[in-house]
Image (cartoon, rainbow, N blue to C red; front, side, top):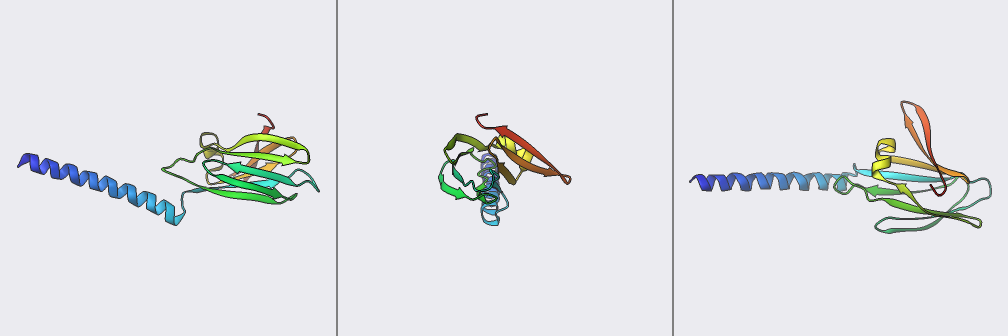
Length: 143
């Protein structure tokens, strides 16, 4: 009898944990509560188009962004992690190789679920806003 009730408790605990995991992942997927938006703004200068090519697990394609325009994409959290996302930037005859545009260990505490970037000729900067104060976290090309 003791072995039977022990087995029943173990099976019940397993079903409870499994139900919890299914509920959490289903809620995140359908409610959309667990996602991160990345916005890339062309701040190169008047008349300069920015060509952006981003990828992670999937290729997000090539996009041409006019000056003061933007390209954005959304990433969904998968079991509370987001794979790294890389982007390549081109304008005129300048090409910058793949930059790690989203790295969860670097960016989660900076921008949480909205990560706006300003793409400039000398550097690219993530803009963050906390308590009403805006701050730029900048990276020079090649860093």
